Length: 167
Image (cartoon, rainbow, N blue to C red; front, top):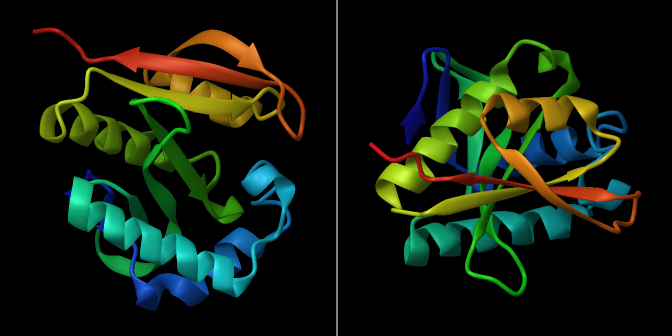
């Protein structure tokens, strides 16, 4: 479990499935998620199962974001493996009702702290659709810097990186 001033993040589990379906089926919310595709409930169940396995074997995966006092799912944040490399990518999504309140940055910051302090990673990546200016602003506020652009299904994808802070 991860905590911030306003949020509690817990590993996603089967009981989160219906809320994840609602989150990821929202047309506005999924604009830049999953290349704009609507995932089936079965695909969402597989994401939950894969995250549970990843937490069990490697101590990372996808966390459910809720207010610190509890309540409904506000979104997700986590770390996932990237194809073809040892680096992990930070990912996050929020229900549109929560956009603009700083929650994505707050959740992503605690996940980055976990990546560096608990997992001992030297670097974390992000891959953001060029058109997703809000998400680009989040990672840039966290100190991530662009280092390349690649083609994506929805248009160019910007690669960002943050290297472990040195004390």
